[in-house]
Length: 516
Image (cartoon, rainbow, N blue to C red):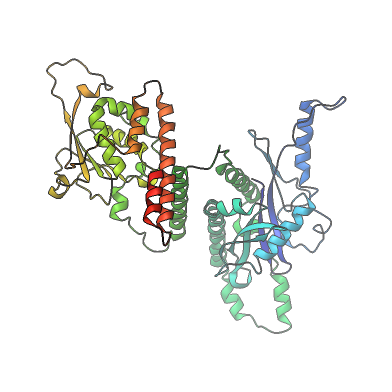
């Protein structure tokens, strides 16, 4: 991730200052060796020595001045800084008080000043986003650290993440917020223990209340309360090494969680729906993190508790199901037979409720996994196995245990279909393979629908042609189904937009329907 993480502090004597900074240095692009150049081993050792000294040169003459108090300084000038090397990518993570490049020094300095002055959220503690194209974009989280010698018994700090990519930084907001809060909470908890111990030894509130305030005494009192370093506030001897480890991991993890993917064309409707659902889930998780400690947690609704999450996203757990299972639509068609499969697929495409009732939840779930390929992801609402009936508006795929009765209004409705999975009584005790589903189960299909299912729709006819062609592999059939779904969803979009046009004639409507 091309970003930079810095810890900033508002000093009562010198204003906003940068305390600690971690940046990622990418390895140079490989070039052909020139005559007289160093061998690779020597070059690596020289690069290591250079990396250790990079942050030493970061301290410009302006920052070496004596106007820095103890609270404004993290590492001494003689300290080489911290260096971590990612063995997989070759990226070096360097940490010191200031960035190694003058341009970055100016950017971080401006982000530090803005995060501790004008760019603050309500309450002065919490996250905020600001920036521009010229000076970069900043994700800032301000917080307080307890100090028994400070005014108000607390000091003001902030952690800023600076990057030039605004979209990337905004998309990383939930991730950065969650992990930065863990680091901040650790610092605050450690400092609070030190604060409580100091207050037990010498309560500063009583001392200040009993002190006389006069123009002569006040300057001496202020000069006597010199700013304390964060190390002394937390009594953490390896504080900066720990922060270097946390910031380095944050840069690496944040850079690897979002990757670019080359698409050979526009994303499909199913891909867009899955991305939208994943975004909603991340926002919901972030909302739960924000609500921790703020009252009772809301209980999930009944619909959320009934609907399993395995059916909300992809069906990648097909191989985890135990026992007999349907492997593909072609396999399901071979088991049920061409006529029963066509009747089942007809109800699925029409949006009717398909009910499977049996004693094997794994078999029923595998049937739903393969039947979902007939529909767009946004049209799938499945309850894999339920002890009671669920209405059609709740789910269009419903699995039930054998003893669950079907309501009369459902069994008599033409908008539902029931598949009873019955165990086959075997007279012999010879072992039967799990792949031989017909030797284990019998399937009875029933529906009150009286419409013929052998002449349409056109989409079902094309699907059956692909499934009946044994020359096509399962992977090719899956791609064929994907293309057919995209084709018909595009037709639906055109028809929907046409329906919103005012003043359309009957002939125009017939032409659009004929083309579809």
